[in-house]
Picture 1 (tube, rainbow, N blue to C red):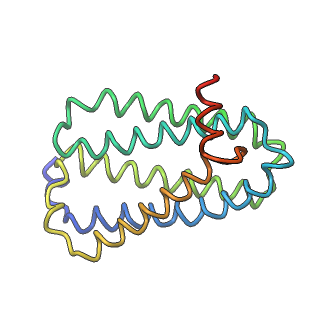
Picture 2 (cartoon, rainbow, N blue to C red):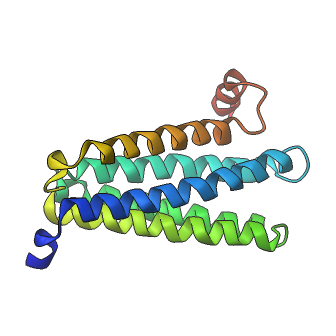
Picture 3 (tube, rainbow, N blue to C red):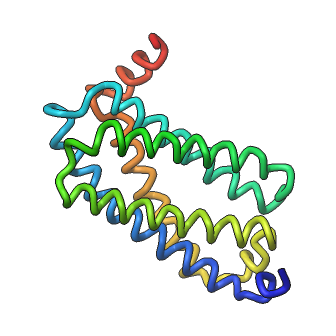
Length: 178
């Protein structure tokens, strides 16, 4: 445990940002593939699974951030959100992607999963065991890097959420109907 506390906050931040950047790059390529497939081969059920993954992912990230203040209290929520997220990822891969995906797409998914695990494990270790000790002392460049990646991820999330709907309004109306 003492070894974790001794690790530099810069180390944690860089590992997390490298993983987030790698994931974001691969996700952008994957989203571009979805854009081409949505009119042809992606069903409404698959799109809903993708939306469930997005929601669970946001909840995982939120619970990791909240570990700054409440590490033990948020732990049950983090574990539940993480399990739900990966169950939906598993369903997506096994049910929808196995037969359809090219080796290129399968490699994108593999890389995305690896980077997601690295980022989640890094954030969990830094957040749960040290409450993000040293976060406030990081170089401003690391914050900028994080905000840029967050902005790109937010944009891709919005595009993926809307996929298959002519507008955000249509997406919201469809959610209400279900």
